[in-house]
Image (cartoon, rainbow, N blue to C red; front, side):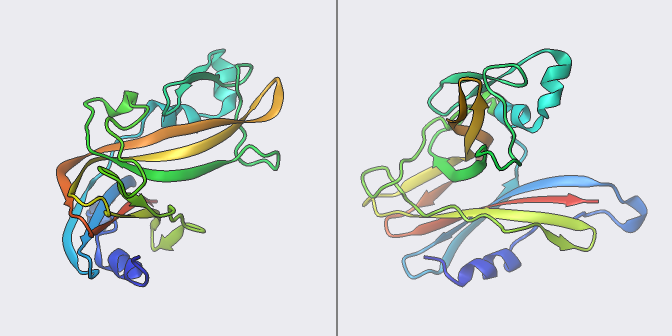
Amino acid sequence: MVGSKVSYDINDLYIPKDSKGDNDYKKSFNATLTIIVRDKDGNIIKRHKQKSHSPTANFIGIMLPVSYYNEVQQCWTLTTTSNSTLSYGYNCDWTFYPNTANNHPVSIQNIMVGSGSQSNPYSAYNLALPIANGSGTGQLLYSSVSTPTGITINGNQAYFIISQSYVNQSGATITISEVGIIINMVATKPASPSNEVGSILTWYDVLSSPISVGNGQSVVIYYTFSVNA
């Protein structure tokens, strides 16, 4: 849908950079959410960008190493988007080894969009009102999520961008007010060498202003994560 225009968007839009001078330099981590809306002819009709700062409890639990849970003798409760829970950590119901060859991967399933909002993103396990994938009433057609093959290095900055596009063929205007990153997680359970845990919400944002996508229009969402070292 967006074709060669994707590179134009990325080059033309703000990618987080350190805003301080060399004499006042500080290491920093930045996450930015950028949304582009196009009309049926592919012309940009709206741009939206905001700071993103809402990792969920699921994200925190997954990022901590398994050795942490062994050290503190505690488990972490992960909650799937269907509101099922599992005990995660060393000697718990599930353990997780993302970088082995034993079929325990994590993949980004999609950047989900919704039309609701939540006041406490940390505790969110799903969007408040997810917008389904499709062309029916209240739905958007989701493309496959685009993930980078590596991390881009630019001077003292390293960043990567994930993105996904959507088309409105519902026949009416769709309003997007919340966005979340969903991963699909496979982990180890003692009773079986490999099991699919399911869909896990790891990052969640409520938009500072809702985005309206008219029938026939399309939208692309970019998440940019960058580190200044």
